[in-house]
Length: 470
Image (cartoon, rainbow, N blue to C red; front, side, top):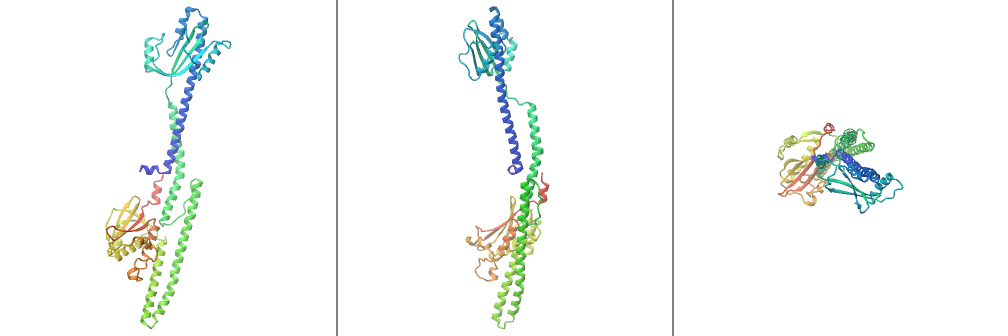
């Protein structure tokens, strides 16, 4: 059931749209996080540059006894200032050092040429306690940061006028991935409006004409009366519908013309055959008269069966919905119990009753004639019904299983109509089955005899499709 739904054009297009929306949102979120990381780095650099430059100027201009107070005041939970004899940075980070150094020099003055070193890297280790942070605030900070800071560390070393170095360690936790509630609600509303309103309506406008076209094609294949399909949907679907309507009209007209020609031909042949029989009856020699009458009767029988074959190709009989078990029961009664019937589960099927009776009668009569008996049963397989007719006769050579469907082909080599018939029974049956959208096949049963299998589709009516439209 799930696989059937996934095979639907509407479902596949909806999945494609949803997947595209989710992918676009994921890319936007990734770009947002990347931009956010760059903004954090820029903020760290600007803040560190400003504080470092100011502290350096204060240290150089303030008396020596105020240096410790200046350093304590500059400290924060994520920044430590100290004055050492050596620089904490022994190499330069060329990726970020240039921007931070330029920010510091802009605050110190353009003529200041002192050495400034910058190092920026990622860290994941405990941060030493600050001198100026109370114990309860330090504990709160460690709990908030889970005792570790995983993020960026910026280390600055600025040369002072007295030869010492001002070393600054600044750390900032990398901000967690966040998706604001407003963005989530906005994405949900956009997806709901796009899918639930626009896409569902547009896809219904696209898929319903296609479904109706498929139903019309099935009905045409079953030989039902073809009516032009209303043209609707996008331009491509409208063009397809127009083409189908034109094809349907041409097919129906062609079959009708051929049927009329064959019927007219049979009707025209009846008159000369009747005249020939009258003349044959006037022949005085009995042996010659009997031979002529026999030949004329055979010709008349072939004409009638040819007309029956033509009627099997016609689609004038309207289809009806019947219960298959009752249909076979009535056929068994009409044929005076000529076959055995195994009842099956109730099954509604749409067919042309008279045509199907003719097809089944031909097949069952062949089974009784050549196999001495016939057993009929039926089963349902998915969306098709299989009607099986089995006999216990000699079967048919494998090489001739397909040839027996050709008109006037007979396995029995004699030309006697009593033993071999005219060779049109199976041809008529296959024509009728195919006009219903099905087919008929033959195979020799492993336990002996011939097995004839008639296959018919089980289709919902057009009105049922219309009720399930959504």
